[in-house]
Image 1: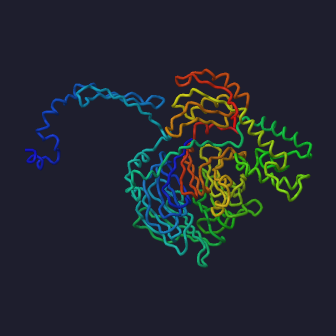
Image 2: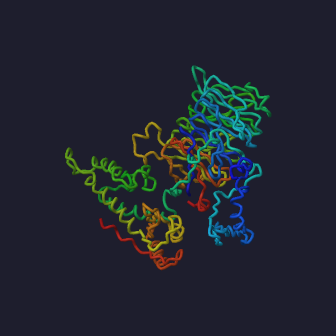
Image 3: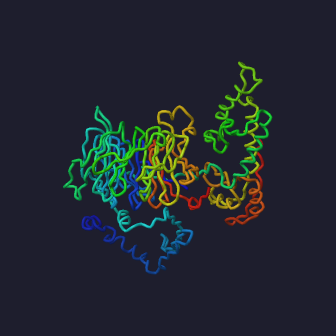
Length: 326
Length: 296
């Protein structure tokens, strides 16, 4: 396959997200402008200008009209996807990190970093139908985990919130009361910071990637460990194919160590694993920095990766990818 | 006269200039031309457009334009996605320079690199057996990695350092250096060049290279349009292919008409040579033979 290279960001990529129809690809980077691209040919549709810091995460509503972004400028912003205009800005006292729309797009979860003696927190906000009625009040604020919360996503039927972060523990919270329902055990869980978390297409299980060089699949309801994928580099990004039983892990050595070693030592490929057999299928090379973000097109026929090198690489699979056997 | 005319005819100056009208009249015979024809796109995506026009001398010219239509993704787009296609650009994308080239298609063909070629499992174990026999004299270690030289830790195919092992010597040195400490007989203190250290290391490296060349097939008399993916498509039917290369002239970037294909298995290469030597490919007769090892 010949990947499409998209050089719209001047700083490392942080997050990638497809909309539900799979025709738009949203990219976030440490520069201040989240960008939207056409997911088939990689043409840039527009940028969302207004943030004043690195943008860590984004989510798009099911009907592809609203975008929410979380940024280090201590805000999370709502955008009109079509016009690129800011609809609302949630202001916090510390940098915002993970954002996720609930099913139905009436709620959103936003996590904030520990900052100036403030602990990290998970905020639940109500998203109004029309932007003029939008308020900044939190429906629920959950505090407790130590360190950054790198990802927070909604569980089935919006009843739970799943969070993971620097303390390497995955927690499931009740989204009504804010009580902690489950947490991953020390023995089976990750040993180092969890960098990424992504749900399966049906939401029944999710995958977490960690700097302990592994990725794990968990049951969304019971938080039972289902699979573990061991690799030889810290995992920064994970994604699951919605079409085949494949998972992709992306990562690489720390950006600060890149200059001290040979480029082939960095292991900057996206590694494909068989989801069930936990065996490696293959690697896709190309980035010359660690992979920070991975996303599968909802049709499963293409995927994109974003790297520390500032490039988004959009890969449309060759036909023979779909009948790989191991 | 022309001076008077111009201000009044700013919208369509060419039509109202009487001086040119006469000339135009003579050439305004477009209705006499055959209509524009469009063929395709056919199953290969080739689209042909045939147009006719008069050139400056008044002669009828037939223009045939052949284009290849390529679909990037076979995505069935929803109605709303089609609508989004026509959305106007916004943000920084509005003032984008034409030359900024933010989106580019990679010049490199990127393959999903398999940890081992499918179907090569047997051969792999056989080779492992060979090196096992070699090392059997030194000590009874069952598992030796050919890439990094670690014993008893993992097989070659599972080597965590395999990415390092590819072409350079420098990285093969490292484990070799480690080996020296273990290898008996080397006098400490005296410098030994890396290539001389640890006897077991070097033969393995050269062995691998030889094996590579043995399964290398040279393909000559290729047409100019043949690219690496085409060659891969042609040869992969015979078995797992580890490398495809088409020589490209650096200055003109036109194919020089020959290339190399490396097979994982020798038998596959042999079959490919038997089948494809003299095969008509893209209006030329292919010549397929074993690649002779480079002389230097």
